Length: 241
Image 1 (cartoon, rainbow, N blue to C red):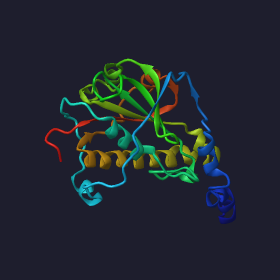
Image 2: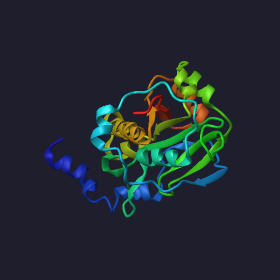
Image 3: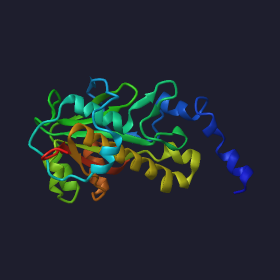
């Protein structure tokens, strides 16, 4: 493709408020879901200041696979989900992680086991960035099933919660073609993963990103026809940071 053709194909990037980000604002899905939300929960507002500097979080960040047997607070869950995909600019719907053309192909779910989050029942929840809330898609404790889908990695079961990030590739590929699938979407989920790592340090939590799992089984557990990219166990870090 010559320079003129490339510029033409990326025209909408410089007009985010006119076209591309409009897809995020109107809720373009591009994927099929088999669940029917049964309950919506408002999350506490995120905070924008912390006693932990970005530099310190970068220095100490590690993958953590051992956790205290302690529940998370709803405020901690709220902060983690905001760090992953929270809205930072309401007019255009911009989020905490960059996205090619502001197409936002990622969806975030949280698998909560029994007594693991104060004020939140066990179940599988879908994060709603625009509302900064959750919708319950399945009641019950699915942490053991998720561990089995992740090839028996025991930290999935030991963690207080598991964040699962999926992709609806069509949101990006309709604009960028195959480059969106093999590059842009995967770049974006990496940005989100690092956001969660750094936010965990700030909250005194630990996490690890997992890519080894049976895709079809994770999709079945969630009840979605979206491609799972990450399973991220999160819990209170033993010994703190």
